[in-house]
Image (cartoon, rainbow, N blue to C red):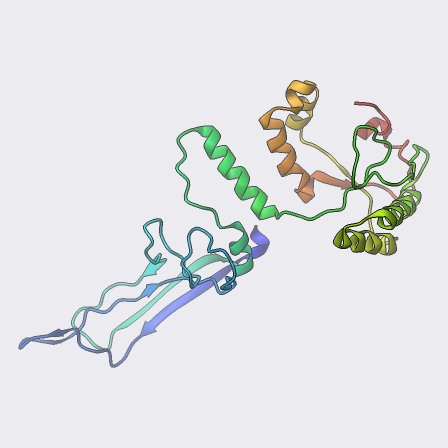
Length: 258
């Protein structure tokens, strides 16, 4: 999230020639002050308006009013006020905020709060559209299994990438969905030395739930953690290109049946 957040330093100096809001025999002037509002220009007309914004991209409160981020002090009875006030703000980029803005939730229980927080984390990480390929799995059918490529424990990471490219090419030959077919063809062509083979390393809590068998794997907590951790780049570790899967069998349990 910090990669999409920047610091804005705003200074309000002065204003000149304001219209008088108060006319009386005693004085002619105003009591001016400045309000700061934030607009997200990344929102376009065809977008579905996310919670917390109006149709023009301005931030608004739960009551539907424009959200004021900062208000200067009030200067009495003047049409030429001077403030010289300065403040710093941490703001997200428009595209990132557009993706992660959450609705206003009423959290009555800790479980509701956890689910709302998970939805936010998932939106921060982004919903990645991925190609999934399966090797040696008899329980999985459909896309990703329509090839005859086999992976062996003696294969190193260079050989694995070659076999992955071959599997993608075989999948593309029988794929009927045009979009997925193009993705498979691109993957078969592009996989090479520039890419790293990485392994998913779950947290201790996730491993403990997996060790409980079907009860743990089918629980909400397991699905919640897996969904978050799978999309988190810090949960993946690179493998050495010259090493085989046998080298990592004791560390990552390659080759074992679950």
